[in-house]
Length: 209
Length: 209
DNA sequence: GTATTGGGTGTACGGATGTTCACTGAAAGG
DNA sequence: CCTTTCAGTGAACATCCGTACACCCAATAC
Image: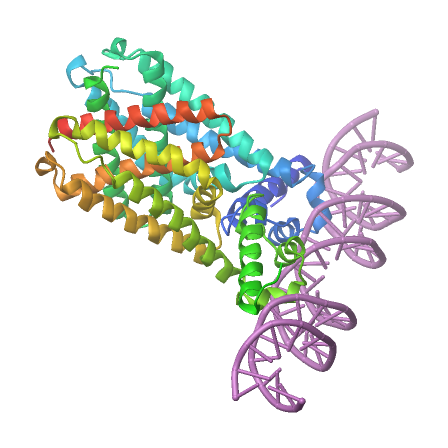
């Protein structure tokens, strides 16, 4: 296989990202060594610096990539079938969200494991980046929910509380899904997620401050 | 200050545990080195082995200690005032739980941060131990909830789903509380937790499979 | 008063770590 | 065709790591 110089560079950059993601699963990015990565990629340690300024920069690149997968999932969850009547809107939203979750998470499991892990245990810079991204997603979700029929009864404080609960539960399910291997196990987690979401929405719609 | 040999030993053992807990906050137990701990304790590296067989053993000791704090919190949360009428039972339970949370977590913040962190990023043995303990707590909570008036409407599957949601949300709040420093911030987190709990219970009591 | 126990010491070891620097050689540019 | 660019090389560095081993000496046991 013949490659241009730029292609070759991109190729090893990918290999570095992939190796780092795989190796960081043993514990976390903190326990990752530049030399390990280089050895797995089949390159001398110093070559690493041709692609990243530091291990921190590598970490931030992985954060960006992982949240790419997450944003992709969210875009999926927002895409509702066009023939949705207001009557079963809630059920449709829940089903679409859980479907996106159970389909996308296993496909990019390592990305979601990465987020869950480095959020609490990564290097300081990476931790901050992950938290910031999650904050952004919570806000987006809040504006989404505010457009829902029945949202008038929620104060903006209520809305933040609801989105926080939803995002926390979803992260936890994504974690479980990313750890699950057997399809039947995944199905069970999907069922749990669906019922939990419904429970939460039932509670929120009954809610008055 | 004069001490017996046994007292001295216990004294340095404590110092090792405390140092390890503090040092592991930079990243996780995985990034902890025996020599760092020894230096902070003011002891030569090899002396470590007089107290623990390995770093793993140290980790497991910290798991036990941290879950001691957590069990203490749960015992507090279960202690309801004797004059509780069935009418406001739910509110009393929620208030007691949140009070226990906001009082105990800041007091032993490092223990709760430890649990949240090592659950996903610790050494394999420590991770397994933490997950096992959480599993036990979920089961205990399930048997507690089963005794509640109104619990008849829940299938055992529903019950597991509800406890999973509750424990997940509480871990997340404990994380937030352990990270918070300003008292007003803690009060806000307590408010959020209280409203979330109520929302969830409202949803669960309205629930039918 | 003597013997034993055991927490802590000091040295030494082989191996892994991040980073530096001058280098090579093939692809790209002119 | 000659020159420049630059991804990858390889040796060297100081520093940290876990652990083995022989040793010390004060508190305990007898």
